Length: 89
Image: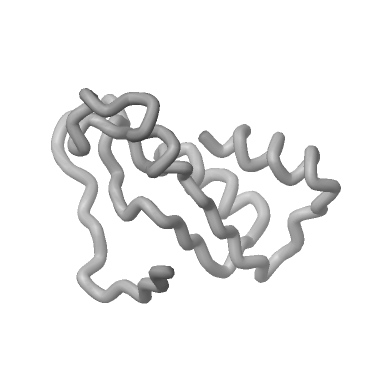
């Protein structure tokens, strides 16, 4: 959720500014170690309310390590772009 980003920024002493890149590490590996029976398609991605946060802070970029939009609670699908930049260890 967008408020999770607000809380994380506050906890780290970060003041969001226009043009910032917002990078989210989802903790997927740790989650699946402790929840091995959860099917991957049932895992939530970044919530749609994140868009409000990005807009309100005039963010330039969103990147996260779990390119999924599941778990939104909305009917239909959320289209994902075909062109992605990816970095993996």
